[in-house]
Image 1 (cartoon, protein in one colour):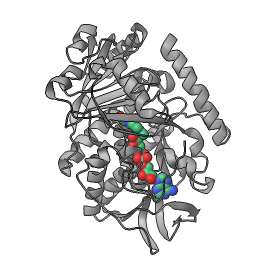
Image 2 (spheres, protein in one colour; image 1 turned 135 degrees about the horizontal axis):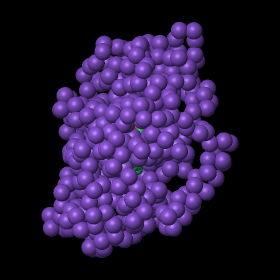
Image 3 (tube, protein in one colour; image 1 turned 45 degrees about the vertical axis):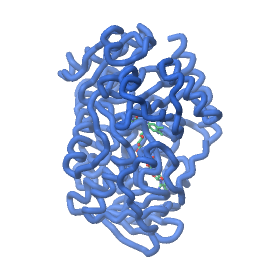
Length: 432
Ligand SMILES: Cc1cc2nc3c(=O)[nH]c(=O)nc-3n(C[C@H](O)[C@H](O)[C@H](O)COP(=O)(O)OP(=O)(O)OC[C@H]3O[C@@H](n4cnc5c(N)ncnc54)[C@H](O)[C@@H]3O)c2cc1C
């Protein structure tokens, strides 16, 4: 997979064709200075910029392509509480107290979306309701354990376990054994949310430069020089918000944190708009869903009743046809429905699915590795990085406790890890 990030327009997708804000920002042509320079205008970069601008900081955002060009403008749009692994797993890793703090922060991540949409009047079809689906009894047992831990240990009451019959009241597919429904997680139009965040930033005086790829960082005693291909920004603090594209950057910028990320390509197709009866035969309560396989399917209906069906287990080759087959395996009733769009992008996975937030120097911050939970966790990461820049790094330090193994070797090793990993996960999905 080629991770190119500079001088490009949005890829064509259902989202780019239905975006409701047409923002265009100039490239950086002259040297500038700021309190904070953020690299990357996806959810994380804009979230951090917004939090800092709300506190009166001068912020410059440098984006190599367009606002929302990366995963943020292409994702499934599902904002899900918790982390890729169940919260019970975190108790084993870091003990109850830290796991409890992490769990509470993951709930705050959803509240942040609620707050921002309300405060900045962002039109992005935000809708609550999300279900994790189990394809077999063992996977259902995993969901039972998550529900029990969330309720009994952390006092979370917004999840309900559904058996097969309860699930089939809302979802028109016979292939699942049950589900864990969460009434607080939800879904949105990710490009419109991203553009809405960008507009809020611009209104607060943040300067955003598009088509301005960063090619180097020079770290001085108290300032950092951030060089683009044309000019530069001098700032006291820098935030790396480049996500899976970090692999395409020189080591002088990423200082080795690219080794923590395995960019897994995921694809989404969008059907033509479904008539109401057909839409109801798919999902009749507005929820978004995701199965809990390792290589998973995730889907939801858009505001205009298209099925947006995503899958990690596909490949770029013949993508739309393969994805259509995946969709029909779940919803055979859509046999005669036309596919209008297909697109893909890299998901920032870590080897152990832990999120990876931290600093590569006292004044250079990053967050990545959300492992499929980035729609919600980027908002939180932006807030806690902003807190650290403003002098309180307590919550960032909590995330820094989580261990994330490096993937040794260069790009070839990553490709090999991805290949072996994908086949290993296929095996687990089939036989576990
Ligand atoms: C197909 C797909 C489906 C997904 N579905 C979901 C989902 O349903 N739920 C969920 O929680 N997560 C999902 N994700 C993951 C989620 O979208 C990401 O975790 C999240 O958007 C990451 O946001 P970000 O701001 O960190 O990165 P990005 O949105 O990728 O932003 C990084 C930005 O940095 C820019 N950049 C890179 N290098 C440079 C440079 N050198 N100079 C300047 N700019 C640079 C890029 O152009 C890009 O705009 C999905 C991802 C994909 C690809």
